[in-house]
Length: 78
Image 1 (tube, rainbow, N blue to C red):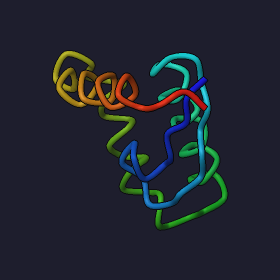
Image 2 (image 1 turned 30 degrees about the vertical axis):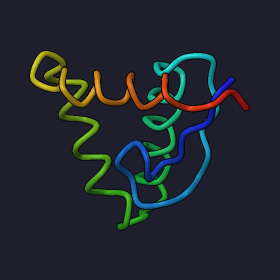
Image 3 (image 1 turned 180 degrees about the vertical axis):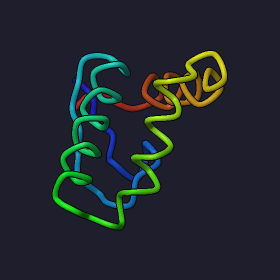
């Protein structure tokens, strides 16, 4: 299990997301950003917009995805 924060994933806060894989924390970040948008959190809207773009254009966002994969792999286990 490893932890990445919203900020490490491109967001504005330090909420921790834990997961066994980088995909786990990316999906947790996506859910966090969706909830923040639903609650009207203006600080998270730019990150939410970027995340939506990545889901819609995965090939275009492969660089970001690979960077998150590498960043996750470099983290120590919790």
